[in-house]
Image 1 (cartoon, helix red, strand yellow):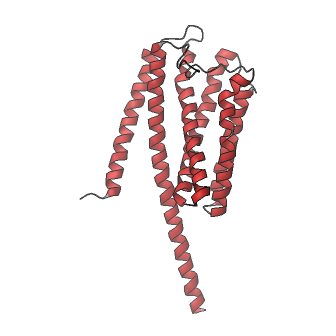
Image 2: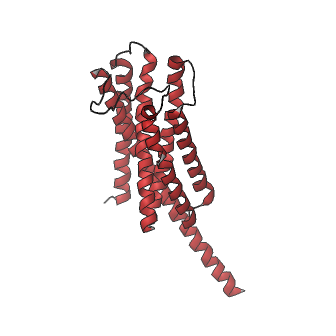
Image 3: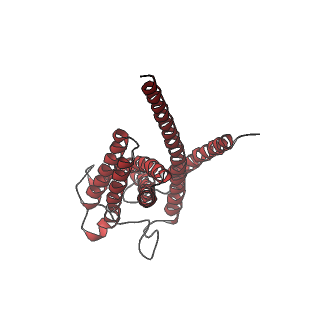
Length: 244
């Protein structure tokens, strides 16, 4: 009979294979099926990486926000573990968003970066979660650090509505939303482009799911090892005290 961990590992392995196949399909659709945008040309294909990464970042940081609230309310380690894992994977996709944006912007705007409302607020969010991850890395797994991180993630999450609606609240160089607009999803996109975006977003979301599962498993393993080492050190201290 196989153990639950072996069954889980096998299921995750199959999911990794499916995600890899999904990305092969997504890349084929992006470069072979989607039409070339009339004004921007081929560089517009960057949208199929940039926008899904941004939406996935929202999901990742939304999980951090929810898990942090649950941890503050219940003080259960499982919520802190989920917040830690989701923050790290969410920041991976935030970094993808920040790096693909300038690559798309340079041929269209003539510059890699401008400090307009959306880009600045997105950069601030990225810095907040880099700080979150640094606090996790150097602060350890203590309850005090977990509380500080939970509060920091809640503050960071408040920046997400600013990012999303900044192009409506202020005049910016960044274009308005083309994928989701009020009353008409996909306005301004050809059906082939909208389908390509859906495939790319599904592949990105599947990748996020796999990475989050792996990171959460690693986080729980690390904490079990740290707890075992702490118990062993306590036992050694007791033995030394009794012998002293």
